[in-house]
Image (cartoon, rainbow, N blue to C red):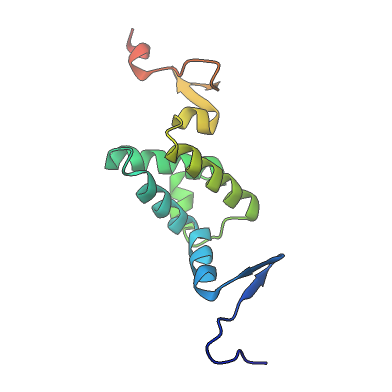
Length: 130
């Protein structure tokens, strides 16, 4: 059963119907490398290039549980549905100006990892020097 001329065919994913062009975009965004680049580009208006790259690295490590080296080696691996949901949530929160530490739920201070949320101040690197 081929699609009729002039009609767009749709792919079913779960209970959603998705147009072919949108499906390609979704699959590309699922690859670790593409998700990283998309995140980095989307937050660049809010941060300098280097900081946007660092934040994208932190978020991708949080989402995948993999360090940068492992993500580079497995750059074409696809994110799971749960990882995609976390990715989307993190991206939206960052785009709304929420601090990275609150998005990730932790911050490093004096080589120790502290759990943080809106009820605590984010430890600053400058304070470590005091």
